[in-house]
Length: 202
Image (cartoon, rainbow, N blue to C red):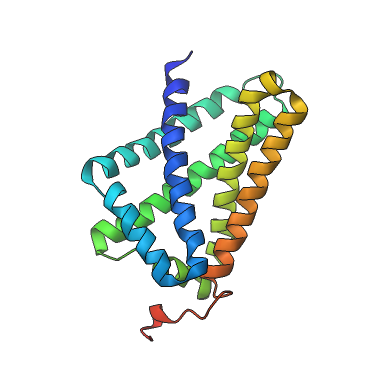
C-alpha cells in the first residue's frame, strides 16, 4: 500500500475522532450555552495540551497535503465511479474548510488571544454581512466531511457487505451530517434561545 495513502488514512481517523467530539460539543449547545462551555473546557484539557495540539495541527496539515496529492492522481484515472468523485471532491472541499477554519481559530487564539467559544462562532452566523458567507460555509464544511467519510466508508465495506448495504451505510452517514449541520446552525443562529452575550449584554 502507498505510504502516503496509509498515513492519510491514519491522520483521517484522528481528525474524524476530533471532529466528532467537536461537533458533539456544538450540538450540546442545544441544552444551553453553559452546557456547551462545560463540555468545551473538558475537551480543551485534552486537545490543548501542547503535544496533542501540535499533533492535531500536523494531522490537519498532512491531511490537506496528502488529500490534494491523491486527488491529483485520481483525476488522471480513465474511469471514475460516482463514489470516487464524491470522495475526491468532498475531500477537496473539506481541505478548503480546514485551511480557513484552522487558520482563523488558531490565529485568533494564539495571535489575538480571542477565546474561540460559543459567542465567537455565533457572532459570524448572526451578524451581517458575515452570516451570508459563514452560514453556507459551516453547512458545506460539515457536509463535505460527512460525504467524504461516507464515500470512504462505502468503498471499504462494499466488497464485504455488498453494494446495497454499503449504500445504506453511506446514506446514514450523510443524513447524520445533514442533521448535525442543521441542528448546530439552528442553535447558533438563535433558534433555540436568544443569544446576546457577544453584544456585551447578559
